[in-house]
Image (cartoon, rainbow, N blue to C red):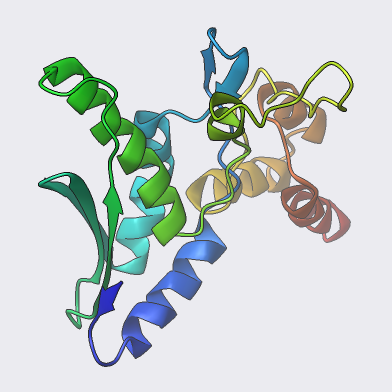
Length: 189
């Protein structure tokens, strides 16, 4: 890992980022391993607004056989950077290289931002997944999570203007923490 000498402003921005981003739900299924996972595009979509509001930039690029992921605080220029070696299943196969890059990007962005993703894809893919004798973890809900930030603010405003929490529950999966925020709005009406 590499970083600037000071990361004070970056740390403050990460603190703000974590107050804005919610749990990221799985949005795809790996039929080969019969597991669900969060796709790279879904993760990037979910973190885009919280990153912007926090003044953070994330960039990723291949460097030889490694993927370099850099998290930058836009205003101060403070950064942290990490490298991940990307094993490629078939050498000299552009599709295999592209797949390795996408896979590495997904896990590197999740790691550098310490995202809360309900994701067992790598565990199953490495042969450490659940067997019939092990307890299965529940799959992701079939609706999107109501995330902190603008989404939650809109839901809270909806409640303040006479909306129903049942309507919100029908549209979104809701974590205990977000539900507590919604219930606080209802108590203050």
